[in-house]
Length: 379
Image (cartoon, rainbow, N blue to C red; front, top):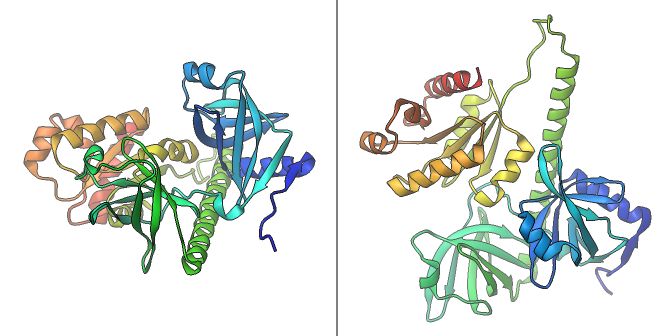
């Protein structure tokens, strides 16, 4: 018996799939022989799909315009394949978009191999070995039923690891407390700071556990987006119906978005400290997905964890924070900041106000400092 059929879908059934994919902001992929891009489906208007876009106009004209594109979308635990073409660029609700023609038909591939999970409840470590018992460590970036991606820890330089596509390695990825994905794998691709591998063999117990984990985390992602959407809808309705002379009406809470890096402990503490004043969201610090989180959550305040205390890392973190945040107020948080480190890296009073030292984890003091900073920035 074939467990999954490779069926062709079209008409109203296909349109419903796209409607659900848009509702869930499902990941979608376009590919040519020389180009690959991944984004989210954010709208479908008439026979045009709107896909989030970070590609430059020159690349679009070079690789996409006028070409037939392989198109894939992951929705509802299944992966659908078809063909589309690029209709141009545009903006939708202040977001850059690619306009794609709605495919006339799609095929449904093995659903267990489709969805690649990129959001985890905690930072997950991974160890990998290769060659003559060379062992290294890193952090899990994404995982699916067919493979996973990870980035080596900063102490390793990618060229010094001497890894290459096609090489077989052993991976042990700590997915959740109490169990890991441990298997032989083949390297499929290597970028500047990430390695993608394909499993060579997963036993039945690992497959079942991984499938349940991905399904549970995917459901949590969807529920979180739906809750956010509902909150945004209520806030919008509140603003529309609010009468300026009605001082008794409760105002909408501002939103704080916390990016954590090494441990979620401080982020949990901040969530508690800010909970009465803000609606709080926590996300792992991953530059690849930060922009998506900002677009989805639209925060009024951003808090980014500052772990490394050397000057070059601190300078990079401030640049990333400034570029990502744009006009949104942001603060850098951590514990046990050395006075000399602060004087060297935060030379002015305005810069020092960006720094949130949570040493001692005093809820009241932390809240007062954030409120003082946010109040002045928001006024």
